[in-house]
Image (tube, rainbow, N blue to C red; front, side):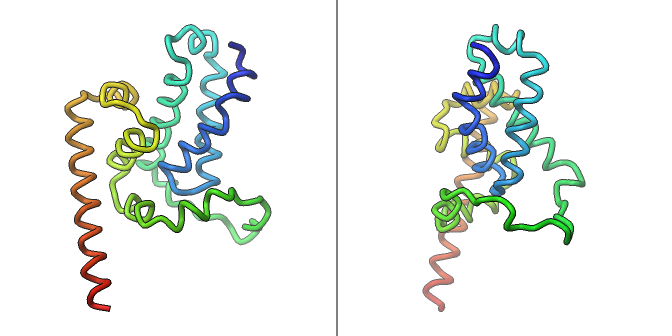
Length: 164
């Protein structure tokens, strides 16, 4: 498979993965672009991999986790930027209305990535572990902590609704 074919076939899927883990459409586009740029630099190596998409997904996830550790992660656009200059993704409205989506934003970056890869991308623990460079038992422990946090958030929201 040539690089252009890969981008045509999987580019939007990478943007969706970036959006699902980051919660920001512009950041998702940046993540996908960075992942594709890094994959292009070593496309011969990527193409020879058993699963090139797995390789590029790992680049994207690693970049997201690195991004969350940088100080610039909290960058805000300047006043010169027109926030209405791009057409928003129609899926954004659907995802924003989902309570689970908002609860995911309360998780740590690693917990969010593990749960997104497990439940949105339907990957098994072994594959997630390979993507993140950790052991499958760490994936299970991280998922367990993330799910416990989500349950706690859900219970808190129910109590808040009853008190309102």
